[in-house]
Length: 232
Image (cartoon, rainbow, N blue to C red; front, side):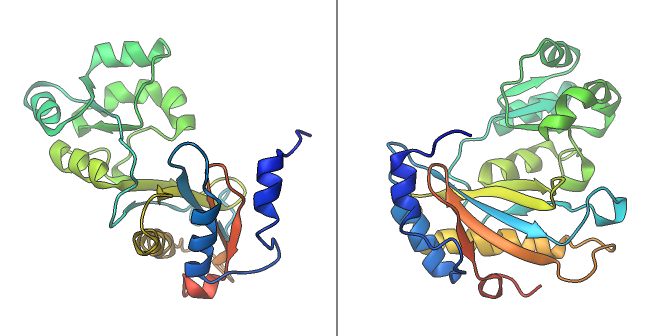
């Protein structure tokens, strides 16, 4: 097991791992512990009472954060003709068709989000085994397979985040930067948790939102009192 650095140990000493903190206090702790030499990302992790091995307990969705993520998102778009021109005009970083497929198959994946027009999915389908495991496969359920290319690009650049439950029943996302004002982080966190609650699947039984934790890139996790951030 890797040794925990002195810095992280010192930070951990200021956080009670057994305590459930109100959301506002948790945010203050995370911001205070985010003292790396770069602007750390603040991430929220939500432990859900679901088993994603069952199709009726899969949780997946999208959330528009009120104050964005603070991150520059590189966007690739599969489109041809007028839609390709629309994507370029809207600020897509990479636009293409067959040549983009070849680029990705060759191992060059230098984007954070992939969007496709519906007519391109026959082509994009070849990349399922490459993009799927990375969470980059376009999907109509989260708005990344759409004829409204400009709308999808605008939403992504404005701070939209996608989420999908992992095998352990955890959903997580970056919800801002440590430099954000506390009230903006709080609004982003509440918006994200609310989106996860609204995405509750029909097969979920019992307590849905079981645990919520907040951390920065280099800081310790802080457990949040669920009642202070979610009603489910």
